Image (tube, rainbow, N blue to C red; front, side, top):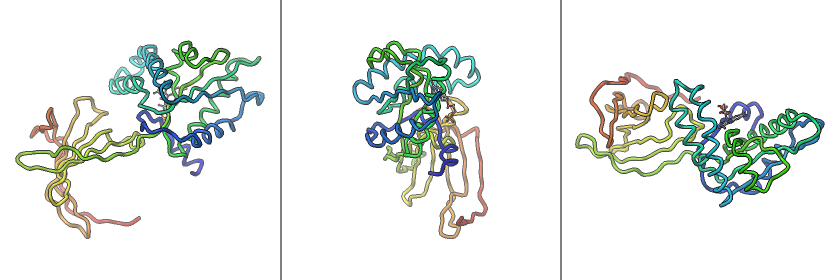
Length: 280
Ligand SMILES: Cc1cc2nc3c(=O)[nH]c(=O)nc-3n(C[C@H](O)[C@H](O)[C@H](O)COP(=O)(O)O)c2cc1C
């Protein structure tokens, strides 16, 4: 992966796949982290990689870090309640990450700021290397509030915890869903889970198709609007343009419990008159 592309493409990922990260991949990533610059070239970083049962115990401790950051979150995101809820959810299981990396420094005779910056440089390398390996990660200082308890579990005495980095990516998944029965019509369903690398899409969406495999209804959640903003996008009047079939009448309406939709207000109304496919 080209460097500029990696720098711009890396994002904090907060939902992960549970399958383990291969040891050799972790070793490559950690090696890259240690190519970072360091104060006086002391390279006084120290990484602890934890998976399995021990990791589960540490997730329970890291979760408690949320209580310390909640008051600040509530101030910073006073107008953005979904951010607070999403952060709380993330801390509850650290996104289901199969592996955690604890980043420490060994104190030196220099000021702690130098060591913190040394470890920070290594962490940024680690995140970029993870990204170029196709993995996701999130730099977290929230769990550092629980450093004493974490250090006890890890048996660390003479080092300072700087950050905790959960890792692995949840890829896009497509699963069969229960059919959707809508005004007497029954459509086959698929549930698609989008990873955070697709920030324009809500995490879980339902796609429903008729017997000709034409998309008829698309259920999603306007997460940025609020927890109540569930909607269904109806797709009708499919027409063929060249080799592709497009729904030309599109209508988005609110969706309530049990998958039922309300006839109004119409949230989006689109009529497509012409479409053309262009290869890039
Ligand atoms: C020093 C530092 C501490 C952070 N701590 C947390 C944290 O405790 N929890 C969290 O969810 N994200 C944490 N982040 C991630 C930031 O929220 C994230 O980098 C920022 O929102 C920008 O998003 P991006 O990484 O996708 O570009 C931290 C990032 C840094 C650099």
